[in-house]
Length: 374
Image (tube, rainbow, N blue to C red; front, side, top):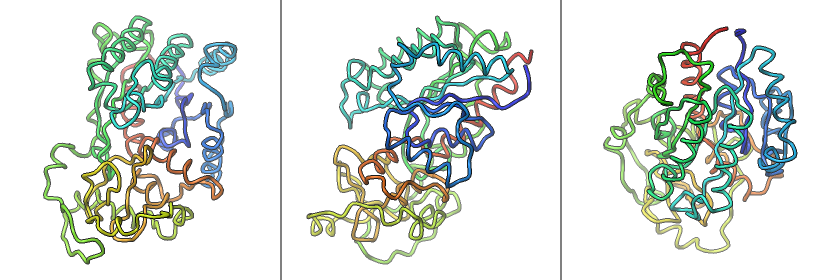
């Protein structure tokens, strides 16, 4: 097999946070599928601002189910064409997850979004990429009634000729200033695997720990600040590890006050008085969580009326600040004419950049050492 960049076909792409991690690690993003026109526009805009190449096969702005119906052969031809050029083909995607999230709809496999997970798995089975990544919320894996559906999906994939490995990961482990757990399922086609790396459809040597920086449980046990009076001065000394996982570190790193999206934040019509009473670092409630400048953020979820407040300013956090919490590079920006609702939806739905970067590196490490080269 020729030594060349693995080629990525991206599904449920949003504005491309997951893809960006793979791009930065030497994969080629050739195909982008996203149903939201607003998110596709943001994807194109951000790549242009960063002087990054556009996908050679283009953008596909419609439902993934279209590829299971009338456009299946179109996709198959693109995948086969890429393989014929001696390149590995990978599918990556995180189907929308509210149906598996306790904080979301929690309708499970029968919800509209839940059905998209099955569609993605069916597409993998039908089109047969060399490898794939399936990303979703912790609830799909940890909640009993959703876990049954997840195991059914995994079983279908193994029966279709893939070996798999799974891991519940926390974004904190990769240096993201955010407590965000996700289940990741990796699959590699058996026909390209070396003989000694899989037993009964389970990869035995997948290097999940190779690019992990921290142990999430140990990070959470560190002596973090709890709460402080809103608007007060704080003097605190943190070691390098703790400092690098704080909201303030990332605000500084991304120069959020001067970022193009610094003014993009919701202005409350009411509730200012309530907002002033919430202590810095009080994230105990479902909504109106005030971040602490010297602590990591809770999961960056900005839907379902969940409001995250700036640590020491009298407002909600900006899009620039939310993107910093998602560990995106400073040069990443969203279009100025994008609605605030869409901005925060695409940010909250996205995979943290450093998590994506770490997973991309991990997959590449495995592919370089555990597949047939001819």
